[in-house]
Image (tube, rainbow, N blue to C red):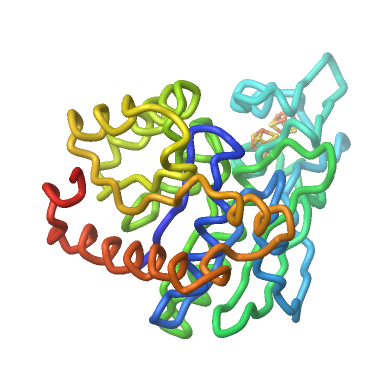
Length: 293
Ligand code: SF4
Ligand code: SF4
């Protein structure tokens, strides 16, 4: 099973939930940081890194001696990453999404694949869980190609060792967030019971609902705000899978990079219950009335 931990905005406790869930997961697991622009799952899980490999994107290199300046490549590239100006072909590697289209269609075989480094992929162990994370270079904007490479590595690990996966997804509802959750079996949204939390939670729910995946919510800082979020979940039949109380111990643990599930038996119980409810949600066996009690 692949479970994505997502949120409509940053700072809701998404990574905290992913780390705690990884701690109590019963089956073999890969904990994956797909928030490639700002990965921070390692700050909680403290993995032992065994391998770091560069992640590349394939970009076009043009041999103008073979070019007939037919314009086919620039007409094809929707990202304007290759452009023919008279008898010059310009390439803009930073804008290239690495689709390979221009290389495939060039009639004169004038374009060959070059490469540009996007960032790095790390793999290691955090306790019993495998750990996998992508990290973009500073200033790099191509999250989706980087995420594709991390996901491809994840697929290899899952197939080779029959592991579940918990994905710490990027916050928000733009392309990277959608890219992270789209292959999941279950989506867990983390939010707070405040007007801001509710606003961004609604955006996430609207963005991810069309995928038809089982989806539930973890309410962080429960007790801090109002009941609007609970009313919205009840109205839309979104199960509340867990509530993390708004307690000083949580904030202190967070500030020290500690996993909440490790703070006390009571906190651990919250995540053991969340683990069970995720499986019930995936199996369509969750008691929805209890989930809104
Ligand atoms: S498609 Fe090939 S031959 Fe045509 S302009 Fe581009 S590089 Fe030149
Ligand atoms: S590889 Fe794709 S994105 Fe990159 S320049 Fe060619 S057509 Fe454009």
